[in-house]
Image (cartoon, rainbow, N blue to C red; front, side, top):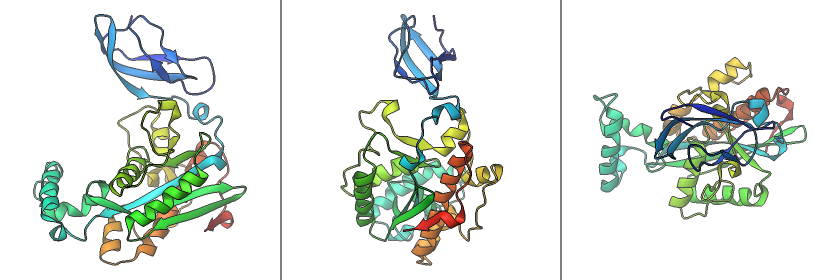
Length: 300
């Protein structure tokens, strides 16, 4: 029988990830959809029933989880976001008030900062920011092709991106992959689509799906190996795995300034495309495959 607060592991009979399907009570066998191993912690027992559990990890072995991965079916992506307005003073009054409330959380760590000064960080929140670029990459034979959707009109850009997903990435064979995608890129995209009145494409829509039906890969999550507190930047992982990356003239914290002040969207697109290629290279390192050659990279 499970005990309250106990950590357990369950091993399946084949080579991939074991997914929890259902827990009936503390004495029952845990039914699985498929595959290999996973961990639960903080089980609470109430009259023999498991009333709450927290999934620490849906997988334990990187090679096992990616065993059947077809890279040609994976769309690698990255998004760049900025605050919805050039500066705090240009916000509508209701959004000024709402940002002031939101910034109270940020000021706990930096009480000297005002909501105006903190507004440069608004771009990381889907409620206060907008997407200015979505860059994608996919393998086509030996080639790696890059395609970007970008512009000042977020709705037009997202409609074009959704049309591409619905046309070319609309089956259970296809996957999306990003670094920290499950925490940032994928939910940010879905939220901004809703804000703009756009139907969320099947591959991004999680509603009603079981865990094993979600076709998302996250290179940061893969590196965690179940350590849910651990964050590792893409920059650090490229250094660890000796992935050559060109020295960028901007980083993520400067995108808002480049967009609103310098008005250089092309520069942001170039930066975004480099990140997409880097994510694809990192996945190949995870799989023990050779890196994509510079001569095999094409921008569409």
